[in-house]
Image (cartoon, rainbow, N blue to C red; front, side):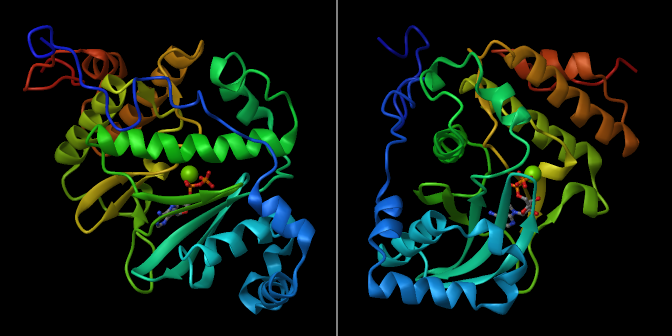
Amino acid sequence: MNEEYGLLEAGEDGAVGDEWEDIDVADTEADRIARRQDREFLEFRKRIKNTERLKVEASVFDDATLGALYKLVQDGHIDAFGGPISTGKEANVYTALAPDGEVAVKVYRINASDFRQMREYLDGDPRFEGIGSDKKKVVVAWTKKEFANLNRARNAGVRVPEPIAIERNVLVMEYLGGEDQRAKRLNEVDVENPRTAFEVVREYMRRLYSAGLIHGDLSEYNVVVHEGELCLLDLGQAVTVHHPNSREFLERDCYNVAAFFRRQGLEIDEDALLAAVTDPDPDPSGGGEREA
Ligand SMILES: Nc1ncnc2c1ncn2[C@@H]1O[C@H](COP(=O)(O)OP(=O)(O)O)[C@@H](O)[C@H]1O
Ligand SMILES: [Mg+2]
């Protein structure tokens, strides 16, 4: 029956748009650890605080965030903390050693100064009703949202870092990069074959859209090249198509992507790209380019 009517089987996450039903931003284990302050946690805290390469970012590691890292260590997701890969407005990204190799650890700052943008993506989203403006709750929900979005993107066949674990405001994911360098962003490389790269990004956008997701901050800064593949990053702000501003976010994504590939010498039209992304039954020859 399903096949006959072209219905999609629900993936692991359940039906589109429902992954927030059980969103729980109550007190976390990490908060309890931070409050309990047992001897081992205090030693862990001292070790992190004394780590030279993490010192400049001391403000990121408040006690509850340290509690979250400690919990991730106890649960076997992290063995040792590496150095910072990126210091952003809302989050910092670090490398860490895990039992199976390197991982990336994204730590959202609870006291991030700029909440304006975060709110723009949360306001009017029914999944966030009742969260209010409590900073901790917003950031914890945001972290869960990025984790769920990464899973949904993967299930839709979009290359993103594999999400591994979350705890409070900390997300552990697959590390993209080599031993001594993170994967380069699209804006940092000479794009050898812009046509192919564009087609891949367009197909990823289309797959996300068919899975009910819009990236919302797509540009050459959130696409990296890893082992010859393009991978999308930074899905925290991605919204479902139900979001009241989803169209505007999608148009902006198309605008950014089209502008980047135009700078690579392609003739890309953002309206045609938008049409290709939202087309449920795409012509295999694609779209997004002006008629010659
Ligand atoms: N899983 C990862 N593996 C390797 N590098 C990463 C990973 N996630 C993020 N980065 C690096 O950190 C930067 C910032 O991460 P991102 O998720 O885009 O956060 P922000 O919200 O600060 O832009 C990225 O541009 C990328 O260079
Ligand atoms: Mg980014």
